[in-house]
Amino acid sequence: MRERLKLIPEKPGCYLYKNEDGIIIYVGKAKNLKRRVNSYFNRIQTGKTKALVDQIRDFEYIVTNSETESLILEINLIKKYNPKYNILLKDDKTYPYIVLTNDKYPSLKIVRSKKRKKLKGKVFGPFPGVTAAKNMVNSINRIYPLKKCDPIRKKLCLYYHINECLGYCEKEVDEKEVNEMLDEITKVLNGDYKFLTKRLEEQMNKASNKLEFEKALEFKTLINDVESTINKQIIVSNVRYNFDVFGVYEKDNFLAIETLFIREGVVIGQVNKILDSYIDKDDAYIRYIIDFYDKYALPKKIIVNDIENISELESILGVSVSVPLKGDIKKILTMANNNAEISSKKRIEEISKSTEERYKAIEELKNILGLKKLERIELFDNSHLFGSYYVGGMVVFRDFLPDRNEYRKYKIDANTKDDLTAMKEVIYRRYQRALLEKTELPDLIIVDGGELQISATLEVLNSLKLDIPLVGLKKNKSHKTSKLVLSNFTEIDIKNQNLFVYLYKMQEEVHRFAITYHRNIKNKGMLRSVLEDVPGIGEKRRKELLKRYSSLSKIKNASAEELSEILPSDVAVSLLEFLNKE
Image 1 (cartoon, rainbow, N blue to C red):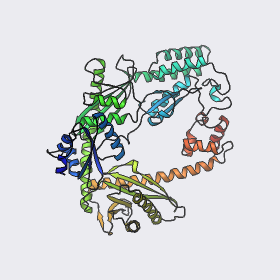
Image 2: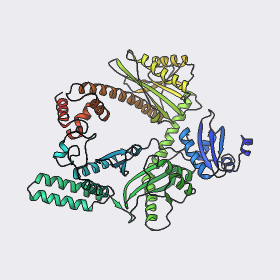
Image 3: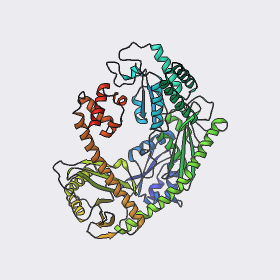
Image 4: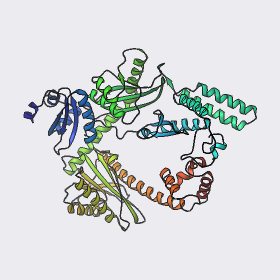
């Protein structure tokens, strides 16, 4: 390798590090490839960089024409190979947006970030959570007569009769009235509520003077809701454009990033993330921001701390990126940095302690099983109803942490009547496909059970000519996990409490995953069966209900108004009456 290091050119580009299995474990970029790559091997490394270097067995590099090209290439390579030591946001929570559609008859939609591009209209947000977004949409829908039904109905519905819709399906609607309504809604969603509270107070007093006290109370409730929203807002600037601020705080090899969403001078939400798998602070910071806008809408401007490659960041994102030196925006960046520190200090201590315990447990299991490598573990479990309708589940843990994107569900042959046959089918399907597609194999397989389950799994693995370490988790008479069963049927007591806790959590997770899948299938079957008995619900409406509501209880808890978005009002009422009677 040393001879190859000498041959690396002093040009910009990307480098890819591989482990002993030829798997890419890190992708980086550099102004000077030779200097950067050699720096990993010609000096003493510590922490995560040492852990990375210890696993490097080979490397590749790609020369680019500029730093911007190397940054773009790095992003694409990380997305393609998903390296262990690179930052990815794929498991992060996505925050909701509100879209005011620009259809002929406009309406409000709550969407997750990835879906917002599919809808045409004005986008507002992100909002701190789904509840906040729903409350906002519900309030606006009650105040303004937007279109509520989707698809639009052929006759007037309940919303028209309670003055929450202009009757777009039958009435001729004044375009000027609609445009004025949209202007006001846009102001509300941008944080301007003053004119709205004044308008609601006028309507409340009007209803009260007419002795319509119930209606006046509704307006009073709406005023309280709006004022509650206003009180939660933090006004930080007189600047009337949308921008995001990325604060940062580093401690003990952890990087905390605090993102503030500023809309019309108001903080409308925040996202806090702690990174613990980065190698270079500035590189991780930039890559985090770029990955961030795969999930969120870009604002007019982005505010960051002083880092290199700001021009490259601007070029890739296509928006203004700046480092403020003074004034209100500098104060907001300082606030974001302070928030990054305050909100993460305790969590970093907890994560650090948990990480130390986790790696001790990994080493303990490696010693017990005599394994050199233990990163990917796959666990299997089955679920059934009185010995029939079997389903299988596989969960994946990397370094004792769940990798939910790798979870898999298996519908099992309807003729299967016992656990062992079900297990054989799932194991065979999983690893035959892995061999055909040449996907990653685990370092360890864990099954729920003892000798019988081990034997059944070994039979399948041998037929596929696979030599993968295998253990079973066996329960005692109290139905508590107590022993590891090796592939030679040797039983080992799990004496280490820390290791026991992690193995128990893994076992509970695969059990939960399989049972949840079984319940969902069963509930959907029951729901479809019940819906077939309700007059007025044909195949198309059944599909819509199944898509939106996954269980009978969710339909029972829905209101007639909510169901009226899919069904005619009279059919919605009939369905609820039918379910409550049943």
